Length: 144
Image (cartoon, one colour):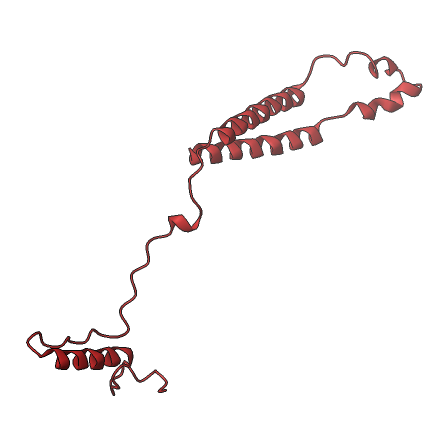
């Protein structure tokens, strides 16, 4: 549908440029104004100009093509389907960010309740503060 719309726009622009060129090439009626004031051909100023020539017929054809292209653009513009949603809805899904802190191991299941409670406190504290490492992954971070 978009290709047809673009082709019709191109036809309309070309026909408009053709009309401009043909109108500028034609000999206007105003050029015979001097004939009205004493020259021998004064009857042709307000009378019939005779049969139309090639330029005037070509201008009429270009005007008809322009008119048809305009009507086609109006028809296609009114019956165009509108995509639902906004521009951001058509973006591809971004990958999920990797976890910044690696998962820590949980307390053993056979430990007594008191040891388990103290172990869970230490693992939660360890989960909130990352362990320092000397690898290249941590070299660009500022220490606190």
